[in-house]
Image 1 (tube, rainbow over the protein chains, first blue to last red):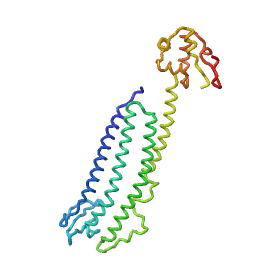
Image 2 (cartoon, rainbow over the protein chains, first blue to last red):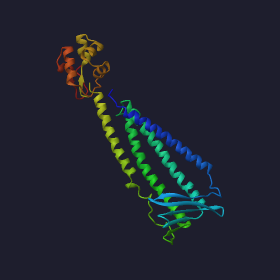
Image 3 (cartoon, each protein chain N blue to C red):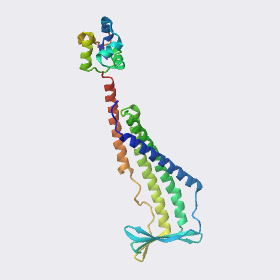
Image 4 (cartoon, chains in turn purple, red):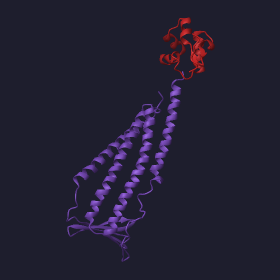
Length: 227
Length: 73
């Protein structure tokens, strides 16, 4: 039995905790989706002083005709974003944002559980086994799949959000009101091409590592049968 | 595996049991069993030397090349 350090055990417990937190987060998201809380008609707050882009700004929510208007000022009042019917924005964030977060929670739970099992085996001194080769391959494939799924999901979310904001908001810069153009054909940040993301490259790297593990397994088996 | 280890025959000639041989050679019973059943992929010179010393034989008496699986036995 080869000597093993305490590090695999530490990582095993860290990933166990992270996996549990991800599961709890996912359950909380599901609960919110089921309860489907609505923004009360008379909800208001602010103006709250916040720090936006390193400059003082304000955020305020004002009730209007059964809904609420959302106002953000930044850069010492030079830029103002006014979003009418903030209740609709909240609904949009729930409808598009919560499933996106749920997808990420599910992926993180799966990833951390795989890593927990991997480090459990490594902690036992069983590094090069068929099970570990499979675990590393699954981690790599999961990262690739997640990079693709999240790219499309985030693109879908960002476009929906932008479409709503473009339709229901006015941006005022130094007193000049600007209306955001429609989102048709616009490339927005936060989504789109998935093949250049760090997660995608990480997936490729992990798949390459699985091949290293597979070769290590062959060497170990050869060594086990060398008397 | 074309290389066979004729441990059975040599052990019988020298009246040595598997347990005794494992103790004297300094390998585990499990590893000796791997050798005896020809499941080993390779053998170290140190192990071969120990076997020859204990069984008082030459490596050629233990090792046999059988290219098509036909033994001399």
